[in-house]
Length: 134
Image 1 (cartoon, helix red, strand yellow):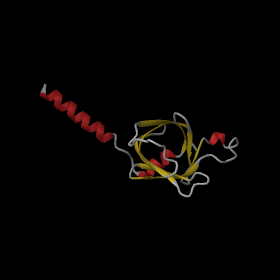
Image 2 (tube, one colour):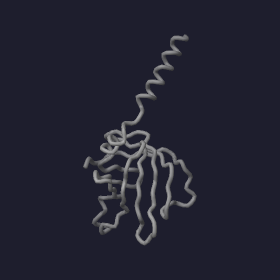
Image 3 (cartoon, helix red, strand yellow):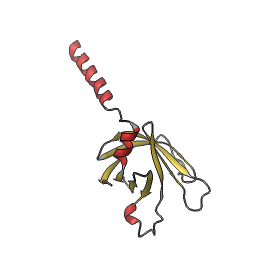
Image 4 (tube, helix red, strand yellow):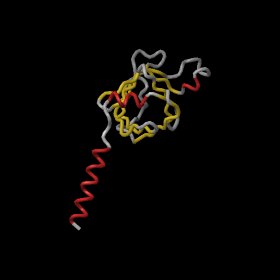
């Protein structure tokens, strides 16, 4: 019985270690593409820019929410500025899992004019699925 418990403990430790994230450069390469969340699609471009709902660009006359992104220490940092606002808004998302098909994350902070009232952080875990490689 003790051997069985020891084997299970070692297996759990190995699975946690195996679940660690790749370096920021690898994460950045994996992120490039279009991802579908519960409400919106987001396209992350290799030049460090992003656009929300790129499929609606013509309908919105190119005025989709858009901005810049970067990954630092396993965290996705997005910035944008709403039209008419004097300062940028930003979010910091902790990447939990990023594969060629799945992005799982939790929002750690959101600042600026776009911050929803009553926002409680850190958030729950969100999942986006890749819909297009760019």
